[in-house]
Amino acid sequence: MQEVLPPPSRPQIITFSDFLGALFAALEEQGVCFCILRNYEGFPERNVGSDVDFLIDRSRLTAALCAVRSIPGIRIVGLTKRANVAGVFVAGIAMAGGSRCLQLDFLWGLNWKQIPYLPASSVLRSAVLRRTGKLSFLVPLPAHEAIVSLLTSLLFSGRAKEKYFPKVRQTFAGCPEEILAALRPQFGLKVTTRLVSAVIAGDPEAMSDCVPQLRFSLAWRGLLRRPLGCVPGVVWHYVREIAICLSPENVLTVMILDPGGEGRAAVIENLMPLLSSAAKSVERRHFTLNTTLPRESGETGAVASEPRGSLASMAAVACWLMREWQGRFRRRNSTLRLFDNDYHDLLMDPRRYGYGGPRWFARLAGTLLPASDFWILIDPADRDLRAGSPALAETQTSHQIDIWHRFVHSKKHFLILDAGKPAADLADEAYSALTEFLARRTERKIEKHFH
Image 1 (cartoon, rainbow, N blue to C red):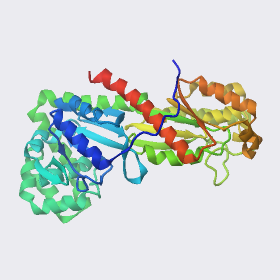
Image 2 (tube, rainbow, N blue to C red; image 1 turned 180 degrees about the vertical axis):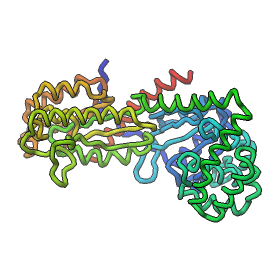
Image 3 (tube, helix red, strand yellow; image 1 turned 30 degrees about the horizontal axis):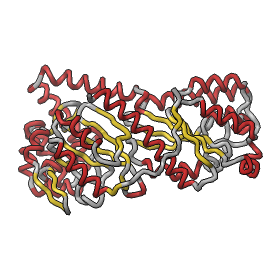
Image 4 (cartoon, helix red, strand yellow; image 1 turned 90 degrees about the vertical axis):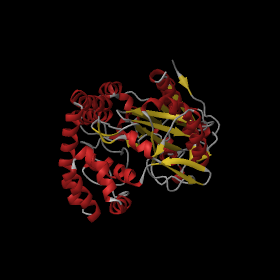
């Protein structure tokens, strides 16, 4: 069933402060006890991190989602669930840098490979009340916050995150006995003492040297304490991670088509900041056959050149096609991709891309591409504008533009924009339509998995 989304009116955008107040009130109304793990120093006016981390009880995840959905004007545009965390991406909030989206992480376990490095229940029970402005919320004890900030990156990547390290080091130096008492049950006294000494000394190499022993001690003690639960938990962790990497739903693609070729770059430049944090990764992608076909310096897309030989052109298309499929299935985090200079430009004007192979092969490769989720056509405002565009006159005809229209109308989800409007206005319309599409898609996912 085809779904064309007309450009909606610009939605109301609320401030980060108003959103926090509404969210905290909604969570309390839903009976969700939560703790803000870190990056709360700028509340309520600003968010000093890239997301907001909530520690909750696992049984309250559905209630937390209901709380987010209950806030007027806020739409959930993405949802990812792992073994111990749910990433919720919301739109409708005015954030720093021009973004209108924010990532919320609801955690119910502080784990490495499904083995707890700090009991989440202990962190929640011992959390302390913090008041700032009109907001009141729970935050971890300084020792617990420092441990989470350190081990979240150290255990997984082998390095401490520089952003948090000064505060972590200060806390470790201020209460080393409390840190030792919290870590010793999971890691043992010897390696815990080495780690605390390395952090206090500010020695990144010594901290990295502790990582293998930290991982081994955590795994060994977890196995001794829960022999029937530890191994299945670790296996299930890897199964879920592989399933996430192989899931095509992990990547959402938006194709932006521009027959005139003049307005697409400006629209994408205005749209990218608006969609920041609409997914874990928001990328701009170019179509190029750079495996065998030359590109002129300074060009980001195709170049006008003499077509290469048939076999070279076909090889370049085949290599590019394989890269696209590999990129679709090798993503550990949710990804939103905005394509400009996409493959369908080549089908319309192969010489501009230096393609000298047969048309049937190019069309076949087009049918084998990973399916795109949403299509945007930047349409010249009227035929007078089309005739007056030098770039359009060189590469397109009115007949070809009509072909673009028929092509886009054959897709299930698409939007047509008027190229006569300023790029900022087109980006606003694209943002509104895209977030509406993402919200509908996510709502179906929530209804399927949480009800």
